[in-house]
Image 1 (cartoon, rainbow, N blue to C red):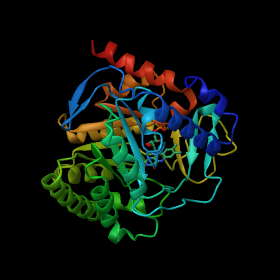
Image 2 (cartoon, rainbow, N blue to C red):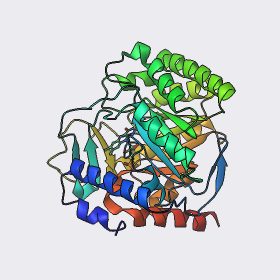
Image 3 (cartoon, protein in one colour):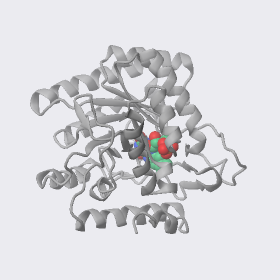
Image 4 (cartoon, protein in one colour):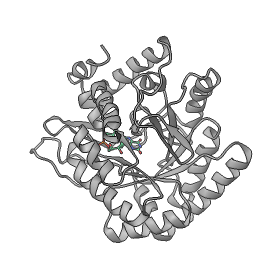
Length: 341
Ligand SMILES: Cc1cc2nc3c(=O)[nH]c(=O)nc-3n(C[C@H](O)[C@H](O)[C@H](O)COP(=O)(O)O)c2cc1C
């Protein structure tokens, strides 16, 4: 049933379909026995063991409500969030649009989430009862809309400290197009200052709790010069991994969709070439010894393989999971074994 539920959900308005899916996954996680990652290509990266390379990208389970249900689908890692220190409603609805013919989405959700404390409550229960097993759990961190950029690092640090003992890794989301000014944090001295200060927080957490790797998630809408700068600061501040990419504000689509001019970030099939371009550029700049997670338009075994061949260590999906469902997850995990052997 869960395999086919994405087909039924497409008849509902997009955000209602999303909420129904989260509810269904929550119920399956609450009632069925825990089930961890499906076996795939196993890798030790950034001090973590990934039992397969396929992960769920951030934004689908913003509050970690459906984490156990999602873990039952076999993902090697799941990234929950983006979570902010205080709860916030996000942008007015409608804010999520389907571009069905292109298997794409445009969203301007705006970090709608219940705040970090509510996530902590859920994760504490899951960890206390050891329900997550070996699925690697990432928590994607953001800042509240009302927090000025000069104080953004405090929001990232506050969220990290709150979930410190519960997450396996953290992602600094500096690349959502839907929080005004957020992407400015990706540039020059602003980025250097933010990453340096966050790194100090990470080291303090390592003393008190454990060392948790920190990943940086970047936009696809960056020039080569901007990628140069990001790569240099990434290496200098010893960030543990890169996630490329978030959604694009550009509008590349194969069809003339009625929603194409909606404001927001586009994801799914049309994003692939841009994400691949960023991956190749960043792999060339970072060399072989840094972890890169590729995300953006991965919707087939061929595309997954192309990302791996272009230097990705791990992959994440979101939009293709919405359109193609669980079968795609299983196919991608299965193909990772074939490709490695
Ligand atoms: C509805 C929606 C909400 C998203 N919310 C977040 C978010 O909260 N944080 C984040 O880092 N990325 C968010 N993303 C971006 C995805 O994690 C991913 O980077 C992007 O969609 C590209 O992957 P895809 O083409 O496989 O969807 C969101 C994407 C969608 C479609």
